[in-house]
Length: 394
Image (cartoon, rainbow, N blue to C red; front, side, top):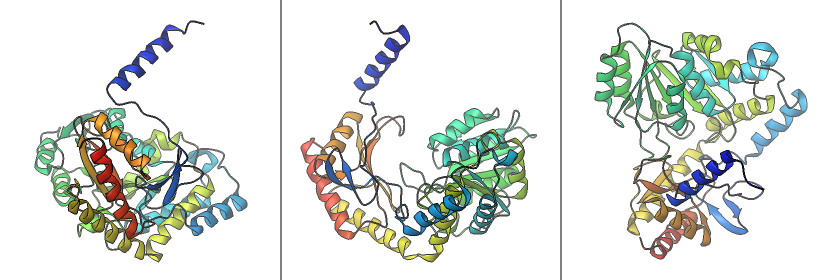
């Protein structure tokens, strides 16, 4: 039977993507994620997870989910503004605000929808958004969804961001948007300078702290704390429970006026069914463990430093200087894919990261460290990386 023309067109697009070395696929990690996983029947050390504190398998989180589901059911039944707001949501939002030293907070089903909801809920036609060139895809899509004007500044260049804000319209809201820790490079935004730029322009600084919350700062509060900065009224803090906090969902914390505006105007918040009570319970338990088990951050810092030392001794260079995101630049997609496959064959899973996730010419293996790892895992990962690099001719 002849395939319909639309499906033939899609098949050709898939072939074109494959020819560029950019095809993607779903690879099972076996029954569950952890330090060791099963990849295509092979036992592999997982070096690609964002479960930085190793909380996704923590018994307290599992217990919180079971107890909440047993007591409150498995679904919320409606959106937050209809009948979906439960005590567990409000309790979690109070805990988020306290954790982030903010006046108020709002809980979203996922981190992606949080960014969509925050940017598009705050900015409207006539407003201005100034965004870092390497911001996460969810922030880029959020800027597109908003009807505001958008300007993009070179990565990390606060002076350029300040100039763009200053050249914006006198009326209307101005948003300066940045990742706190950039997910693919592992570097930290110049938040002091960016906050000053937003303050001078009379705007708001939106920080996506997805990869910093729970990890960076003495108490795990994120990139602001890491840089010795306190939250101030012009700062809007966004983050997720799906990485270091071991669960699922996103949050925004900031001034009361910001949160009320989002309740009134954020379409992803208004029109999404509220997260189930078990999800809210897991999120709250994750926040509590950030304070209850600080040793996880200490161990994560030690392991991250060890991995960089081992890489340097092997002649391999990490793009980042600190933190659990340790990217090793390869360059071309095909070589990076070959390296990722060679790693898997040797028992380490760290797949290739290629465009459009990263800019052309910067394909890489993005190694990530978690508190569930051990020192011998870092040595194994580097030994296998060295062998695999030789195999593929790097």
